[in-house]
Image 1 (cartoon, rainbow, N blue to C red):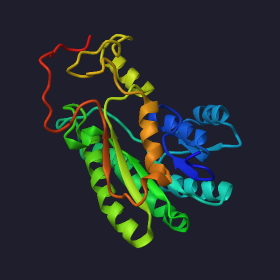
Image 2: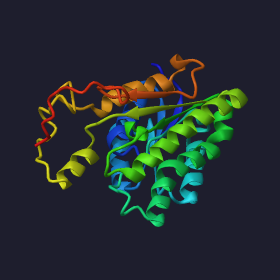
Image 3: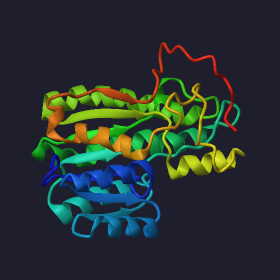
Image 4: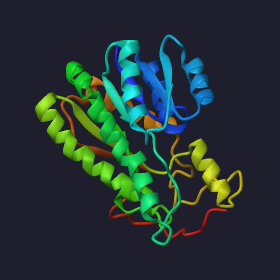
Length: 263
């Protein structure tokens, strides 16, 4: 087991990528703190993973009391923190016209500032275990979709934070900080988002090569498999790195001639 006896916090872990990471962590021998907004979903996730392997803490990460409470709850329960996975995020549609100050402050607070404050709160405990931080970003950090301006900006800032702290915290405290930038992933949230855009319930089947060379998009479990490398000792002293997990390069791509749209 690659994570035996490790204690790992995974924010936003009641659905999607976060839940897949938490589940894989348990399978690899870790104990996990499940976090989300919905108490019912959190309780269901703990039941699924096993109450001897997981417990839940719910709360809004835009509230500083949630951040402090989450870290304290983990230490009170397990006595240590080996890794922090900053996965929770808000993915609202936005563009230049509708991105006012209040909106931008909210998206940056949840997607960028909360991960920073969680790292700061967890720092004393990560120092003791020479632990690690894994930030879950997005390939949108490189520029983003036209209707994801605020989200894309927040993930770009997260990527810069990863590289900065990945250098500083490893040199000063032997704490590794790395990031995964997932591409298009088939999460419950993405399925619902595309429904709201007017797409059919089977939009993710038989996608054109322009969008998905494999004919499908990535599964959450495949992102979780990559996460285990960064959370385990196998990644050694590697820190301050960003790994893209997508089917095609985000820079310098040679797109195929099939430009048909998703139905």
